[in-house]
Length: 112
Length: 112
Image (cartoon, rainbow over all chains, first blue to last red; front, side, top):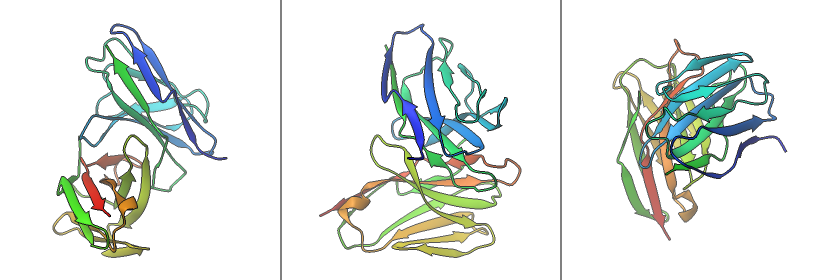
């Protein structure tokens, strides 16, 4: 099955701890994106990567970090510097010059 | 920053009725896309319209784009209870290849 996997589906952490969210794809897509969604809100872009070993900040990158060491993987670390990390996090991909994005199922992070 | 703004924020209709959602945006775009999100899930791409197109159809979906008014509409004909979801418009700009800017969405409820 081709697709995008995000794990875990639910994640709970204590304030002050860093946490890494996983995003894996076997679609052979070039670009990968991380979004944050808050209740009743649209998606806000955190980071994106168009090729391996390269990534760019989105609109709300502060308190987050990413890496893109492999084409298939784009993990997102939510650091303790992120003031309000509780949210629904979505990973997406696009292939080549195509414009539509394919989304993973999301990870709901709760920090208390 | 969020680019699109959907209207209305919430829409409630009976099965069989048509549902119309609108999206307005502020800057020049090269494409506009509509996505659907079921509660707690990832987004699913529905339809893409390029800036040089005025109307597109896909099954029960009809999308229009008026670049002079910087607005788009999504029409779902003969709605079904299974169409209940949030619908988001997302705009793409030529200067930022691949990036999409999402609105806050319209929550559609279709009653059986």
